[in-house]
Length: 116
Length: 113
Image (tube, rainbow over all chains, first blue to last red; front, side, top):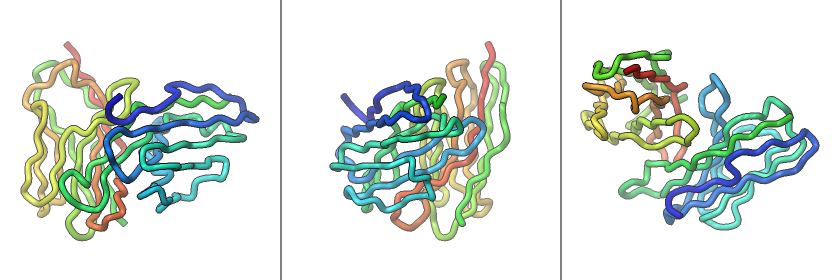
């Protein structure tokens, strides 16, 4: 595997379910991100992890719970979601701290989530 | 705060037409600027970037020049193909080191044969 991978690619869940999205980066980066992409809205940054510490949480509801067990893996745990949470969830990674290429975020293909 | 504004879409062109997608930004200091592309059913891919004023980023026939005097980073391509149909996002990263990208709302490009 190369780049940033995300599983599953598609997920349908009921409002009472609990599920998790997984992201893995194979680029040796030290920062990872979750974004939400809804139709007709700008990309919304949800969470940022740098060196496995959460450094940003953009007022995301507590029904979304991120976890970063190491610099290569990032999870988004979902519970009691609402239909308006249906969206494409994108993971990205980057190398923070300066140096060549440190500005660039690399994205995974996303998980298309539908909440019934 | 920092922000990015892109032209509204969709943009519909015939094959081999000239493309311009406008992007302007507001930021303090000296941000880095990016264009990302999202093909149908996929995530975002970096298309090109520029990290300082007057830099020109280029890739796959696309170009954009970092213009600090007009705070712009317009995307251009001389001859578009059907395969260029996608959503294009302009983005900036501020001069702090938080790594946070600010995205524009995206511009859909449709190229017809």
